[in-house]
Length: 288
Length: 220
Image 1 (cartoon, rainbow over the protein chains, first blue to last red):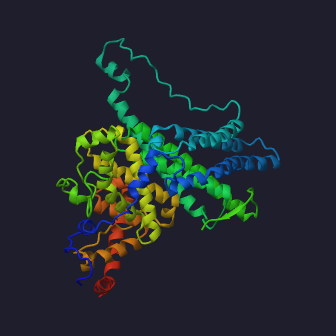
Image 2 (spheres, chains in turn green, red; image 1 turned 90 degrees about the vertical axis):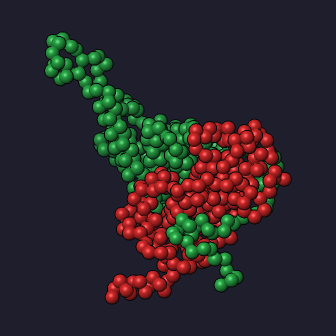
Image 3 (cartoon, chains in turn purple, yellow; image 1 turned 30 degrees about the vertical axis):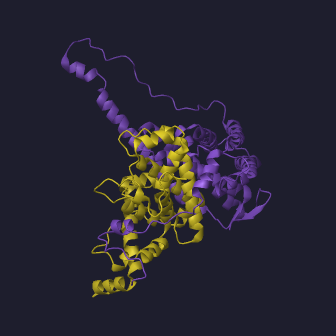
């Protein structure tokens, strides 16, 4: 048909896509960008910026929700008869470190900082402090005394293998693994650890997808979910940087898993509260 | 005003893209070092030149990833363009190149921005990722309707978000499955699966009758 834009018969999808005409954005794009670059405080930069400012008060609700999510299980545990049960203690100890470090560590990661817009009003900084502080306090409160916060380092003798008898066989038997073998082993270990993190992340993501109900959510829960989504997005952006060192990649995946755990905790808690007809927020909000 | 206005096509006035074996990305525009240096030094007209060259590739990439089937997608794509360019401006001093072209660096920022927006809108959660789906690529020549730009655009817009993103990043931008997996925090097999399913689905959408006939032939 002459009135319909047809492209030469493409041989594959790549050619077909490449031949699609490029659509033009609006004409005011550069003007908007210039205004944003100039940083005029009284000029609305974009819808995104406006939404960020509008979300400001929700951060306070989000901080309250973090506290509520952390405190409610403790309150419920307090209602139950006290049982010095090892598994219960273990639950608390394993959950406690996952909240506080994730929020602060993501904010401190240079890659995460890269993902945020560079030329933006410096509004989010105080909010980050405001939200992480209660979480850290909660974590500190929940952390039992005497529980080590770090795993003890593996005991490796710093002394070289002794060479007392001078025999070659004895040397071979007593010397530690060669550096190349040790590094290969550590690389394999880190690959296994990375794989485990990726698997857990995928499982948590599936759990969030199942638990999430976008039709109705509490205001604070929705705000917190959005912020966690954005945090995960920043981590993803950092992860996608080329040439990332393995250690940094593993650290970012760890942060992602921790953020996903928080998100899964919030979503499942919300569903759980809904099924019990309870809520701990001031208002419900309809999403779309 | 731009130094060198781009009235019709970004590629029309921008330097010609290099000849590569892979798909020809609309981003593949070589930016002169002198222009980059000026933009890095804060020369606004130089940055405007860069903006004019890349505004359409960024906008189109965002439009394809975000959907393009609704009017609101254009607004979203405009915001991706805005945020991308703000980041590019703010991080120009960090770009060192080291053998990688500037357009690849800029494209990476744009892809990240579009995917972040998808994530913030939780659109991808509505997709049903099926790991281990059969990886049979759609065989044979493309349907003739693939040459109809409007039909192809509509069919693309009807694909699930994740599937369309994978298709676009692989076929139009030349990303590998490993790179797509890293961008989407998935596995390479997920990317391959989405690509295979997306190709088949696109074919069905473009030639529904033909795909039905093929199925009948297969059953016969």
